[in-house]
Length: 172
Image (cartoon, rainbow, N blue to C red):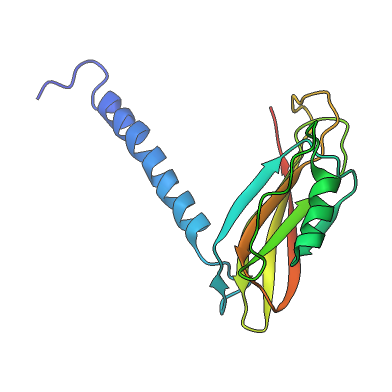
């Protein structure tokens, strides 16, 4: 076998360059796919995003559990920035609950709010929310932003609580 001047180093580096990212992806997938240890006896509920973004008329932080068409129209009309304003998407509230979370107003971009999971804990439902903030040195848009996330899930008739985590994105 002719290994050349550098010996076995180039093939080893190639193997590490190919295998290491795969191992990292498997590890990240395994960590992110595990059920939340904080909610071991829970069932994860499916949900569908109605709308998610950074520009809303809703200026203050708020979490809403919407169970009726009137509540839905009120929250939607307070949120929608379209001109002319759009009608709220149709929801069958006999079968669905809408959850809307608003992060408030910021004078730059780089902020985000996301409903990550909804857990049915038998006696109550927990909505896991992640708020993201830009770290020092991050390049962000210079504009007022109002991050929000609105989802629809199966009808919830139990007490609902919100569990919020905050994350800062570090930028080089």
